Amino acid sequence: MGLASDILNSDLRATSRLLSFIEDGDPRAAAELKELYRHTGKSYLIGITGSPGSGKSTLADHLIAHYRSKGLRLGVLAVDPSSHFSGGAVLGDRIRMQRHATDSNVFIRSMANRNWPGGLNRATADAVRVLEAYGCDPVIVETVGVGQSEVEVAHLAHTTILVCTPATGDKIQALKAGVIEVADIVVMNKADLPDAEHASKSIEMIVGMKPAAAWRVPVVRTVARDGKGIDELAAAIEAHRRAMESTGVLTRKKLETATRQLRDIICRKLYETACARIPEDSELEQYAEQLMRCSTDPYSLAEEIVRRLG
Amino acid sequence: MGLASDILNSDLRATSRLLSFIEDGDPRAAAELKELYRHTGKSYLIGITGSPGSGKSTLADHLIAHYRSKGLRLGVLAVDPSSHFSGGAVLGDRIRMQRHATDSNVFIRSMANRNWPGGLNRATADAVRVLEAYGCDPVIVETVGVGQSEVEVAHLAHTTILVCTPATGDKIQALKAGVIEVADIVVMNKADLPDAEHASKSIEMIVGMKPAAAWRVPVVRTVARDGKGIDELAAAIEAHRRAMESTGVLTRKKLETATRQLRDIICRKLYETACARIPEDSELEQYAEQLMRCSTDPYSLAEEIVRRLG
Image (cartoon, rainbow over all chains, first blue to last red; front, side, top):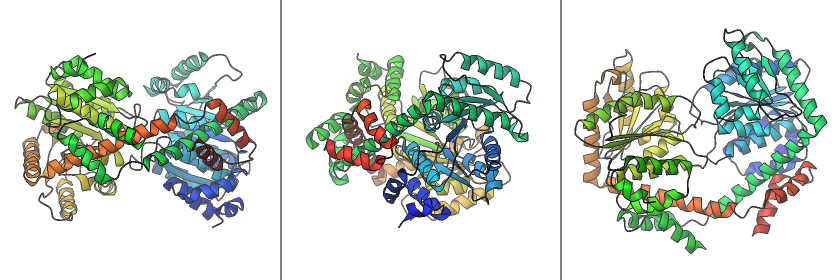
């Protein structure tokens, strides 16, 4: 099919097609990804995460404009870990970012959840590779704020931006989710609201408690609606990138991501092999009939069946 | 520890404790569940599903009052597939059902998502058994409306209630998610809103297109806020139950659930066995260094490693 070579030649439709394969878990994706892989790994990955309504997409929108003004081609993956049907967040994002819709140098794509644990992370990691091969640099990965998934997507990004607002609960929620631990930059959006300065100071205190490191997490005040603070944010991203590069942290991070991805692919393969060995439905149903009579329980029965599978 | 025997003696704290084990994936749960299993399988399971804001919890609240007025002890599992942190839905539910909080004959519990695919369904299925052993009958399982998860939890229930409102999108969303296919009763809540009758008729048309069966899905009009239509809903549940019992559908459904649960447990066991065989991090990292040099790709590498594990 030659999707890979078309993508390397900046073919938009081929890029779209492969992303669909990835999202659908289509086995045809693997061969193309194998071919693309060695052409990737160079682009800078920016993660944007935060609660719904914090203004992530509007910020992403301004960042897109910022990088476009520098002549860069970039990719945006809007990741919704909650599901296909959970809500308008991703759709809303797409609409908000519509003003870049006709710009072939901005590739925007939504990614919805898969059933496999970490399936979304794997699909996102693969999608990033495809966008890199298409020539996007940077690639922005935006996640709707849903606990663990935020953290996982943040692991993929080189610079992770946590978007907060003065709204009650945001700070506590971020702390609880452990998200603040993975944030390289905190954005206090809606900084024109009355409580913003107080909230910013609280967060500065929280991130100040992180163990001393080469990088001090800044709290950047923005008013995304009006485009205020975007230059400061872009400067903070650049500063973080330089700090990561000079200290070797970036290389280390990439190695960790590669290791994690490798483990994930192996795990998935082993799982598929294992599941192929499960007895047929008709056979399982005979076992289940024992359960209906309560002559055994499913845990003991499963142990017995697995033992028998050897 | 004897949690199982305490639970069978209606010990509230033992029940709580085992539910926590289940939610945390604590291996101590299995032994207790094995012991409880044969005392379960008799309670009636009512599923309530629908979009956020449709009024599920308020309906559940009225149903609780209804069953309590008949002297029944009942359990409520509020299941949130999106995550621990996704929002106030489950917490809100708990608060709304607070008026039953001091009633030891109403056991209300929130269940948040686990990482394993279907992990929540498995945990929910286990939690139902525990509540049964504690003496709850019926057990109400309420899910926040998130596509696939709704459908899966609906599979567990004997009577599944889909809560709709006249609000735009509800109908289409339900159809798309395939939820309407698993609904045994549709509730048109907020039936005092102007569009309610039109919306109800649309849904009656949709459910009317289901292949002819012994059970015709009714659309029950309610105003949950005012407790209107609750008796009708309870009557519809009872009618559905009788229909299921007399046609043998209930037995069939229980067998299918047991089969699915058995498959799930086996699958999980095989997966755990498989994962235990994955190389150590240090070894994986050496492989990942090949990836950093782009001398191979993770898909080919994973295939090679899995082959070697043989």
